[in-house]
Image (cartoon, rainbow, N blue to C red; front, side, top):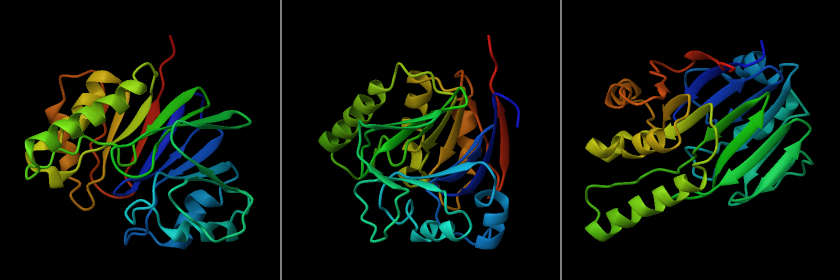
Length: 243
């Protein structure tokens, strides 16, 4: 791949594979019926590029222990794991991290931020790109919550987003959860207005993929491009423009 190019593959729910010029990143992968493990290895894990696997927290829709078996195909994989997860495996390439912390490996810098749920979120700088995965950081505006809870959820979300406001983010993965009914777009819209990522990728919708198209139309007047995902294994080629 050329400098500034990033190939992004949607797996399922909040799971994505990201390939840059020198690296492959895996975010919050969980097993799904759309791709078998062997095909996965051939497509990504067995790649000659350095592989980093990220887990934002221990909820079962974000952490699947099957990722730990991938060392059978590539024993150099590095796992970046939120410290709310405990793994009883002796692997020197597992790195536990908490929020508001950082790790550096050669030419990749990993910073962590908070969430409005469990675990953390990641900002990864590599190959002159900033890539952000929100995990469960979202504006969780549930209709059945009382007013005080709804206000607190809004304030907590905006507080976390404002911490990263100064970052120049190229690609951002942001929850757009259909369970919030008509409030599904609040977090994603605020993120786009505040952070202004070049590419905003909706996630956290399980099989209700059509909400990515709905969200794209909802914020079409903002500056961020939204990837309208249609199915698992869809790919998007992001090209960074240099000035």
